[in-house]
Image: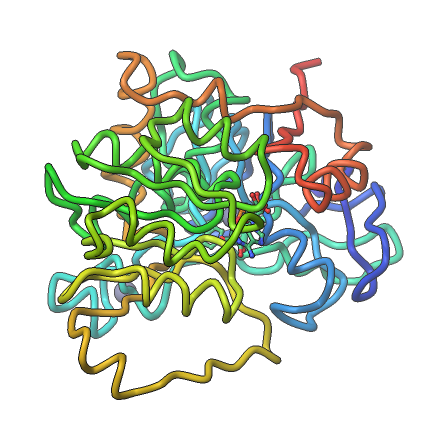
Length: 364
Ligand SMILES: NC(=O)c1ccc[n+]([C@@H]2O[C@H](COP(=O)([O-])OP(=O)(O)OC[C@H]3O[C@@H](n4cnc5c(N)ncnc54)[C@H](O)[C@@H]3O)[C@@H](O)[C@H]2O)c1
Ligand SMILES: [Zn+2]
Ligand SMILES: [Zn+2]
């Protein structure tokens, strides 16, 4: 039976998104219906709203969610009705050329549900990153709904669904940061703060946080940064060199999505260092790269999608780290908001006031 819910819909590029009544069809074969309990507001939702990652409007925004499975489609053996899940925006298919050679984190045919949601006037919605979580209910592929311990509550758990997993995974999987190494993180928002926390968990010796906002740098210190660089005060590359005996860092991370900060992250490396690009660029961006300088430094530039994670392996692990007190998710929640407050949350994000606003949809 089709149900009626509420969701935050972006109708046109650059315009405010509004809460609308939405119609949700039952889950099809291999799909599940999830009642969303919480959803973090990630910068990628802002990219969607502005039209910089696609033009399939109207979008159902939100992609960092946790909730309860309410119904399962034909053939679904897991998860089960009543399971508490975090939603993954990538779920390996098991069959593509990457899955076939044991690299499912690169899956080229990641699973999604068929379009099951539409506006009250009948227009099919494109769920952000194939999920759509700023809503009361969403339909996803069964393998996108990963059961985790209820000891990690929804407002905290939802952050594992994107920003936290991306940041921690970029450190542990994309870069394989070694204990004792030096790290610089450009951009200390929700994702960058998780990179810092990941570097702390990986026992990096020096973790240099770079941002243009003092409040972000103060939070960065609380997450484990050992040194803070305000890029407004001068050249951050020079500051990082000074902090590393003139050498630069072993690992640099760009968590903003801008050409100038990607170049800074490249030049802040020591010889043979690794630079990881996490920030999402817009289609107009270009890099003017002195190739000889790039060659001379050696090392690697890697792009990290979702921290090269495997949600079914990693979501329960991170939820467990939270339960044990090894992963701080509480501090990442700057504001808890209602579904009607996502526009002010985007504005607060643009003004740099938040690490994460989290939409909370309490149980009725
Ligand atoms: N690769 C992935 O899989 C993936 C996953 C999630 C998010 N992202 C992307 O990661 C990026 C960060 O996301 P977020 O949610 O943390 O965003 P955010 O807005 O919370 O954080 C961005 C941070 O960058 C800082 N910043 C801006 N300009 C700067 C500059 N010139 N120098 C230093 N710092 C600067 C801001 O002050 C802010 O703290 C976004 O582009 C987002 O789309 C990528
Ligand atoms: Zn995200
Ligand atoms: Zn695959």
